Length: 158
Image 1: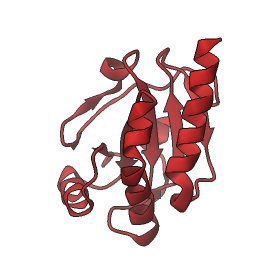
Image 2: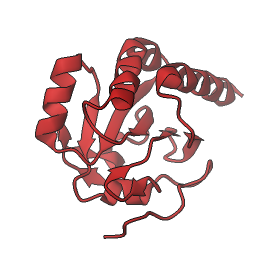
Image 3: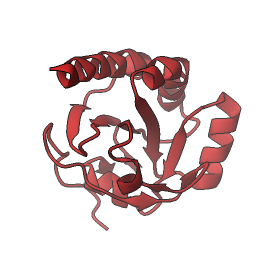
Image 4: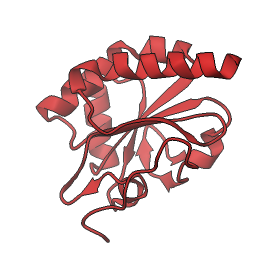
């Protein structure tokens, strides 16, 4: 396993597909592509201050994101059990991928040693990276994603 990942995929690139354990159920990205836009957000660790702020911000903005035809999936190196406790404690309405072998993080350029880095990607219904944020502000995550999804929706209308 590499300590550091390759470069993150660029906008327009085909999104790397994966299968992974997750809370509340396993995720196979290939089964989700084409149904909705997928918000894939990487964060360092459950129950840490910045990650809790980001998760709660996404929780609070979840209905707006859902209304823009998106599903949200968080990714960290934590176990399914840790994710279950984190999701229950903060009432998170979205799935959390347990990237314990770091493979998903490596595919998206987010693997950084002991924790993954805070990156966010939007995968469109065609399975391509439609937007990415490599400098995430945990307190503004939902607003930034919402703005990107609104822009994507406008592009789809053209």
